[in-house]
Image (cartoon, rainbow, N blue to C red; front, side, top):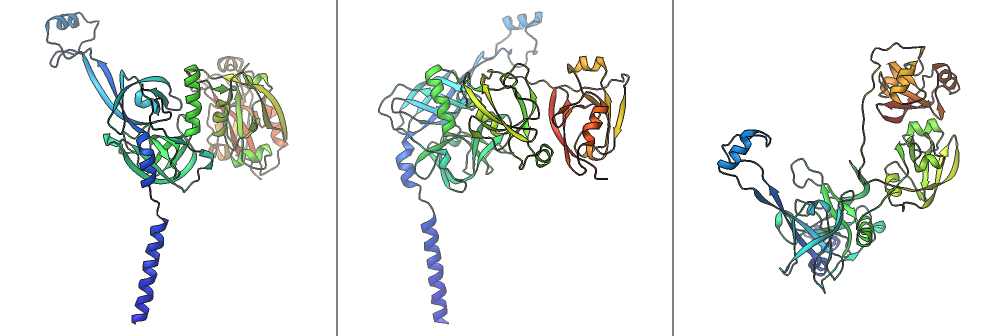
Length: 466
């Protein structure tokens, strides 16, 4: 009994010792790198045009507004709004990185170091698309961070964040890398690093360190239903940020490449319909007329496999790769077209500062429908477009969806959609559609280019095997 207890005790002690050795120690990292992390506080002046409380809230054009403005007590015209964030020093002469949203519209920016010194900062440049801002303070001999290699960062490894959550300076939190290359809504240019490091308001703009004490990211966003940390934090890779910094320091602005296409992901069903061995690449559903891709001969239904030598694993990869290409440069694009690989050379354009997407629904509106036909294998009834409908939609050809059922309904097609192509074939009539459809074996997936409003995308429908 005594002997058995001793063995168990030794085993427990050994296990605890082993676990203790495996747990990371962040003290050295914090001591060496913590001094390069700063607090960023901003002040915004809000110009108040409202009258004093108790006075009717009248529009400024109203005659009584001027009367109350002159003779009634006035509310304070200017108010100060203050906010806090974090940042880190990237050079000893005072260049600092933070988030663009931390300093957006700020009238005054103050940077406080860990030794309590404070400096007024100016914005060298900011890029809202990547949420990166470059600040400058007048100081020398400052501690600076070391940059890490994001490509070497592995999912599951330990990372550390230092910042000022809720104004608590130099707070340290730790966790692991949960994923890499995350794409977030409206953030197509940043392959975010996802971690479970505790990030809260005030951490924005602070550094994310690997265990070597190198910065691998800028803490930028959290996923939260409460406004606080819930275990999902997202950081901008440092290589993306430093590319922005280089452009801001040299030109004061950031330029990005564009090729003028609308793309979608290649699903397993679409890959099968286009004869691809695997669901990879970016499927082109629309090409901008006279854009870089159009001039290079790229067409809708092409699948981009490589761009400038970089593999396009999925549609989320292409915007980042294209944006990183220098406008005006020539790049080689590898395409999959009609069962074969093609190479084309493309002259990269420049993306505009502001983009606008307009979507509107198209309805038949009770107009007379010309020649229509049912396609039971797809569950579709299609009609040829009238001249008026083609003019309204600004297209040359296509078939109007009259009704859906079965496979088409399961693929989310609906009445009022317009079929522009089947696979690589542009459709001009129901007879042509039927001819192309009859050449496709039973049980195969068919890719239909469907236009809804002003947006066109491919939809895969599996043919009825009967």
